[in-house]
Amino acid sequence: MTKLKKIAITGPESTGKSWLAEKLAKSFDTVFVPEFARNYIDSLKRDYHQDDILEIAKGQYRLEKEMEPRASGFLFCDTEFLVTKIWSLHKYGNCHPFILDKIKENRYDLFLLCDVDMPWEYDEQREHPHLRTYFFNWYEREIKEYGFPYRVVSGLGEHRFLNAKTAVESFFNKK
Image 1 (tube, helix red, strand yellow):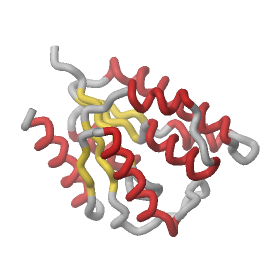
Image 2 (cartoon, one colour; image 1 turned 45 degrees about the vertical axis):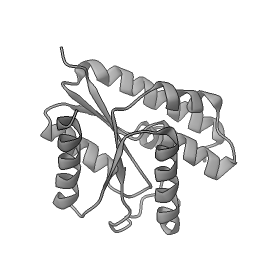
Image 3 (cartoon, one colour; image 1 turned 180 degrees about the vertical axis):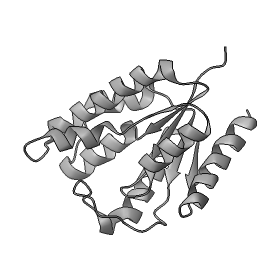
Image 4 (spheres, one colour; image 1 turned 180 degrees about the horizontal axis):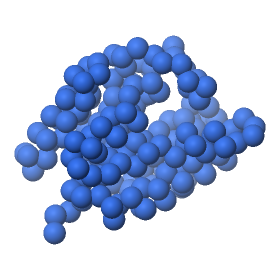
């Protein structure tokens, strides 16, 4: 049996991560792990707090583990622990050890880092339209510091999807 290949789709807000995860999963005839944070925050009857970021990280992890048995060949993950680390550090100046540990333990075979070359789309949960390049650079630094394999995905619409699909295919064909 072939080992499941996990692909993390990461990057700043409004860079097409959710759309890309779903579209790639369909293209590779598998499943994707949706972003847990979106529903979690929507269900709150208050502003989120730092403790909520930890709950989001744990929920994302549980969801990923639930989806793994359903995946065939690839599992596309709409966000991962670097997202919660950067979010927590930026907003609160620190990060829970659970998140830091899971970054090292919960390995991905490839990270697709979404570029900020597409237009910003407003959403109630998005907070930093003016900091997308800043966050993109932060994500890339973190990925490099951890030594994770990654490809930057850019382009608009279908072109972005094709670039991501090609990145996945070429990365895994070389191994």
